[in-house]
Structure formats: structure tokens, C-alpha cells
Length: 360
Image (cartoon, rainbow, N blue to C red; front, side, top):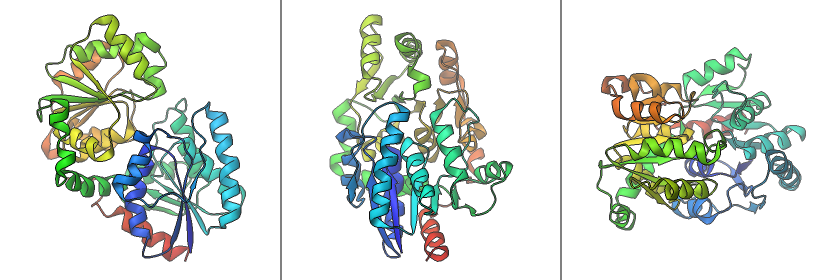
């Protein structure tokens, strides 16, 4: 049996690292990198660090408008499908690569497996929400990370092919945090950045909803960061760097430390040692939860509602006052973590067994 796997963005590389390892003894896998993330720090480094097989195809699509990017991917993925003739096409998450892969396969009557199915923010203005809803409705296997995701699909009449597998990101965090801590070179990240564990906060900003307000929006967020008692370290996304640097220069902020994007292992180390995470990222709020680091999500909704239980994650509007209030006054409840809503850390193996038994 042959599985064609589509990846294109950092979170998908992370998920593919553990699922590909589980698939390796059971079937043939051909990995296709769309090129949606094409900077070395956001792409090649993940394949090198995480032991993911090198992509057989790199489509080199790069950046562009949503329509242009998705259209280019559709054309090139279709060509690969026709050449490889896979039994299954597998996609991850909610990026343009996800939707393009699912659409291309569906048009050619290739069954689609969607890892991380059933997530909903119920905000259809988000490109990610559009991508995940459309992908779910044309997928054969809906592989859900949580029971909430299963229930979301049921509300939309999707019950066939639905399985609660647990979250492959938990698999990754459990494995690779241990790998990172055993690597002396990776552990130098704290000294290199002048950081003391639990004496800094970690932040990321990259979603369109966060940055589309331009300099004014970024400045509002940074004004809150500036007033926090610990330094705020930001691995800055390429699309946000110019705005961030301008905001810091104009306002004279001193409590914000911009750093280049880091590899996945370094990011795990930075997250695990932070006293708090502030982010608009779906993946990072969940990784913080796995590592028992309190999180303020800079959005008014989240797909990962399980993380909100016990205030381990709390939502904030993008005003200076709300961010500051949530960051300073939210106290998490340790007892709230006992239910283990994301599974037991063996989601990848379950996904491999499902696909290879049902399709093989």
C-alpha cells in the first residue's frame, strides 16, 4: 500500500515526524512538500532535526494570495498523484496545503485521511477554519485528536470514518523534548539568548487576524508585553518582523527581545522553560499545555477548548489592557489536568494501524 503525504508548514512537519515513523514498517510513504514554508528556518531544518524522510517532491509553491497559492498547489499535487497513483492521500491540520491536497485527491477519487480532523473555532473568517471544514467534508478517514473534535463532526452529520486517535502533537512533544534535553548543543539556547529558565515569557505573533491591523495592532500588543515583570522573548515570524521592529523603534520598548525563528527542538526548550506563553498560534498554545506552562492566547476563540479547563489557557482580546490583565492575574488549577483529553501519547501508532488495516 502507498500513502502520499502532503506537508507544507512547520506544524505539519512536526506531526509527520512521528506518524511517518509509525507508518514506516507497515507501508510505503511518499512525502510531498508543497513549499508553503520555504525559509530554511521554517522548513528544511525540521526534516534534518526530526528525522523525517526527505520529501520525494518539493513543489516550491512559496508565498502568495490564498487563491493563487492554493491553485498552484492543486495543479502540482494533481500531477504528483497521477504519477504516483497512491492508495491514500494524507493531510495534516488546516493550511492551504491541507485543502489543496484534499481537493486534488478527491477530484481523482483517491481517499483522503485527515489528521487533526474535527477542530472548530466557528470563525469562518479564518482561512484555517475554511480549510479544515472543507477538508473534513471530503475526507474518508477523520482522525480526531480529542472527543470534542468527534462531537464537532457529529454536529455536521459526519460520523462515518471518524476515530478519536488522540493528538499526534502530544506524541511529538513527549519524544522530542526528551531528545532536546539530552542534546548539549541544543541546551545552549538559554545561554546564547541570555535567558534564565522560568524568568522570561515566550510569545509568538503570526496570524493575519493579529497583524492585519498593521503597526497600530502590533504596538497595542507590545505595550502590554512592555509592562510585564519578565522579559518577553519573541521568535519573530518573517511576515511580522518589519512591523515588530518598527513598533520597538518608535516606542522605545526595552522588555521585548526579538530572535530569529528557531528549530523545533529549541522551541520546545524555550517553551518548557518559560514562565508563561503568549501566542496566537494554535500549535503553541497546545504545546504549552502539554508542558504545563500557562498560556494566554491572543485570540477570542480557540480550536483547543480542552486547554481552557482550569485556566491553563485563557483567551484575550488584542487590547493592551486585556492582555496585561490576563497575563498577570490568571492562576491555573493543577487538578484540572487529570482528564488527559489529548490521549496517551500513542496517537501516531493508532493512525498507522487504522489506515493500514482498513485500506490495506
